[in-house]
Structures are given as structure tokens and as C-alpha cells.
Amino acid sequence: MTEWIDRWVVDHAAELSTWRRHIHAHPELARHEYATTEFVATRLIAAGLAPEILPGGTGLTCDIGPDGPRVALRADMDALPLQEATGAPYASTVTGVSHACGHDAHTTILLGAGLALAQAPALPVGVRLIFQPAEEVMPGGALEAVAAGALEGVSRIFALHCDPRLEAGRVGVRLGAITSAADTVELILDSPGGHTSRPHLTTDLVYALGTVITGLPGMLSRRIDPRTSTVMVWGAVTAGQAPNAIPQSGRLI
Image (cartoon, rainbow, N blue to C red; front, side, top):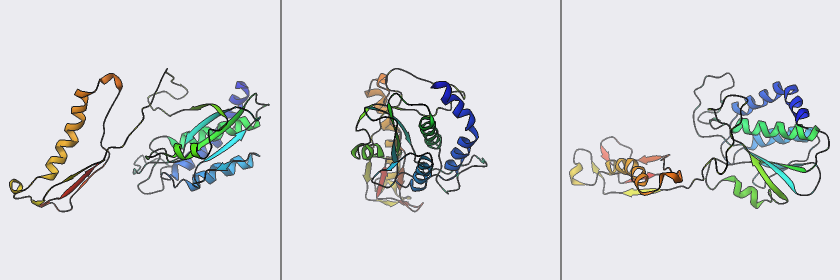
């Protein structure tokens, strides 16, 4: 079986590369992966499979092989709200959106694996492909996929993540968790506001935000055992509109 799949990958390498570059050039944000979902479903249907799109309209599952307890293979599909600056010929064509986390590769890898398994000799167990939407937001699309029954009848599930630190052709594994769970912390600070020429007559909200931005992660590093691999990173800071006015409200996420 392994040798057969290896040959399939070699025979379809150019096609897989074209698919990955197409998805990379047409990224879609979380819960908006409509074209990506259609792209994947079209190719699965062409192979004689019957993919089922998740209730939200993005993401899908597809069963291959005999009934019974299935092994699930999972990949994510959504892009990030980041402008691409690589200059690659297949760079993102969507302003402010790019596949900067490898989900274009993940989607292509799972699509290729599914097509290879669908054409392989009789499988000893059934396989379920799970193309999960909205991995990059919270709450994530995994919850919606599970609620839709994506794991019903699944005995075990496998996934992978691209790591640019590994050379092409190498796979890294380890015991236990390899990536961390994430939670969102939102802080809103309020002040009376005022003019920047009179910070002593009010509360300097921007200065306070800066103190929290740098101080809170530092404080946690002294309160939490570093062996827990806990890290706190801010992703968005908003406050004010004018350079000569101390704002009345600021937000950290």
C-alpha cells in the first residue's frame, strides 16, 4: 500500500503543486472558505467520492473505504488577515489576506491523500477526510465540525502541520502535545481622556496600555512555571484617533 501511494504521489506531483499554488493565490478567511471548499469538493466528486459540506457552508467531510470504525485525517483550510510580500508568482491575489500558516499545503496534502486512497487497492479500514474551516479564529471551526458529526464512528484521528524549520522530505514527531491550545484575553482600559500637552491633568491611557502590553507577559513569566510552555502574546491594540488627544478608551486582545 505504501509503495502504491508513493508512486501515486510521484505521478501526480505536478498536479498537486498546481493545486497548492491555486489555493495559495486565492486565500479565504475563516468561515468564508467557500471557493476553497468547492475546489476540494469538485475534485473529490470527480474521483467518484461523495463529500458532505458542513452545515456552515464551508469545510467538508468525505468517507472512503469500508464501513465500520474509521481513521480520520484532518486538515485546516482558512488563511490569515496578513498582506503577502513574498513576490512569488503564485502570491495571494486577495489584498490583506494570505496563507501565511501553511493551510494551503495542508488542504492540498489531505486532498491528495484522499484521492490516492480512493484509487488504492481495497482499504483494510475506512478513512474519513475532514477539511476543517475556521482554524485561525476563536471559537474555532473544530467545534462546528464535531457538532455536525465529523467524528462519529471515528476511532482515531491524525493531522499534520507544516514546519519551515524541517527540510523538505523530513517529518518530525514527538510524544505528547506538539502545539498548544489558545485562549483569548480581552482587556478594555478607560480614562477621562485629555490633551497630550497636559498628561498630568488626566490619565495617560496610551502609556498605561504600553505598560500592560509589556508588563503582563513579563509578570506571567515570573508567576507560571516555565515548564508549562505558557506564553502570552498580544495580537491587536486599538486606541485613539488623533495624535494630540489622549484617548478615553483602549482595547487589547
